[in-house]
Length: 326
Image (tube, rainbow, N blue to C red; front, side, top):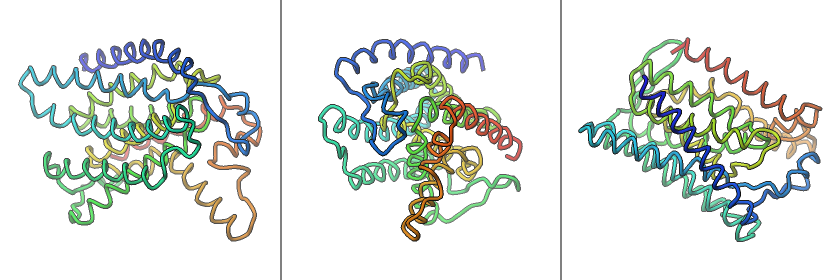
């Protein structure tokens, strides 16, 4: 356990130093946030804040993961390397899709960014590769854990593959929608990832413990720059990456259903958008003042810090409950 704590601390330090180096570069390149006119008026003051900050975490996670894999490779523990690799590839792959989108918007000044169809195809390809790697290379099987009744249920591969792919795409989209105010997505996902890491400790899943420690360390460092008032936003680069991390870890642990509980905040963010759009199309009226739902609370008078605090506490409580029903 001491080794994992050291990894957490080193990850924090590396990501923090990278933040100090990369933030001025993003400012110099004028890779700045463009707030929507229809968004909350309070957000107009954020115009000009650097975005694409997720690149800080991607670089840190990649460097540290490769370092850890080299350590275990030299120690002749090849199996650990094989199990960390897919988590890293999915994380970087999802983050790269987000980076291309951000790059086109912020650097090339293409307001459309990456076409939604292209983005979905990219995420789909990475998801398929990840799921097939788990099944064909790691041979983890197609069984999933059912919380509460505390048992594993084996499902046919032809059902498991599309199910796992949907989990990855849905989780990524949910985290992306959660990223709307300073520090929210970073705080909520860090708690979720920490919960999955603790489950890895309970089940003694080494790759989850190691990778979770790396990501948590990097997230905590990024949070220093991302808390209100944010000095940098993660952009799609960071939100898609974190969605990939959570989905990947949950699938390796065979606990994707647990995300419905511990990741309830991202789930509600997604549902609020779906409900709003459906209701508006049918009636021409809105249920919420604005979606995703964190904007509803913002327009109801809640400060950004209050929203982040409340949503994070809810996530923390749900994660504690989740740990008690596995």
